Image 1 (cartoon, rainbow, N blue to C red):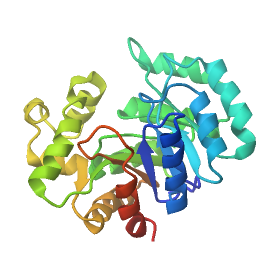
Image 2: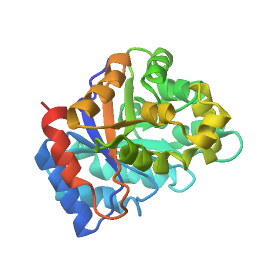
Image 3: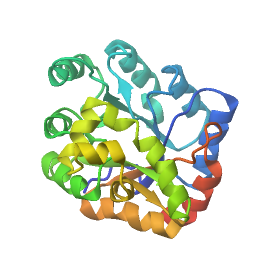
Image 4: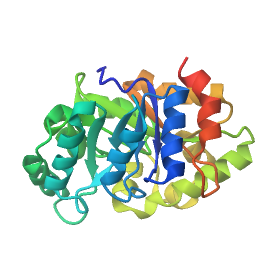
Amino acid sequence: MTDHQFGRFGISTGLDSSPHSLAAAQAAEELGYPAIWLSGGPLPGLQTITDLIGATNSIKFITGVLAIVTYPAADVAATYAALEPSGRFTVGLGGAHGPRPIERLTAYLEELEVPVEHRVLAALGPRMLGLARDHSAGAFPFLITPAYTAEARQVVGPDKLLAVSHLVVLESDAEKARSIARDTISFFPKIPGYAASLERQGFSKADQAELPDHMVDALAAWGTPADIKAKLSEHRAAGADHVAINVITGVTGPQPIDQWRALAPVLLD
């Protein structure tokens, strides 16, 4: 496995430039988390990355991910160049929607003036994993099982970063935990790329429609902090360098700082 200085466990969340988001990033840093992966959907613009780095001292930020259909390569490169002296920003890319996504992303990467070792790609299928291996520091897949992590490691090879984002529910009541996780997971089978990824992992179309317990349990870690660490550690044992926790609570609104705090002593020991 590789050492890209993101640590064993980080956080995946959506942040903006609001005082609450800046305070959440500061709280994550104070708790000892080494990295935050910034969800691309909630990201209002590249200025937010600059604002977050300016509000913190040492925690690293990786966009997880910037959609190439939204952010021109020249703008991303300019943001990276401005933040490069901090050593705390890695460009994560994806979102090559529409026809010929591999060719489209390849062309973007050829235009992007960011060092290969400071960019990663969202990758689910074998072709995208191969692109991440050949044109970036590594891959950042989401909604995958530890068994698929092992397959992804085989594709990207031993020397590339493999960082996995995994859903986390800090809830020991099985019915409540699965309900929270199921509500989030239900969105993804509607997206062709994720539907194909889930099918590659052995989840049938019926599974994707019904979201049975075994599927939810495979894709979301829930229970006590110790239970959650045990589940996330399966990705590490399968070959992941880093696991980013995507904490979901079933409530829209504040960042899950209390859950990050509860998990920190166990994950960051």
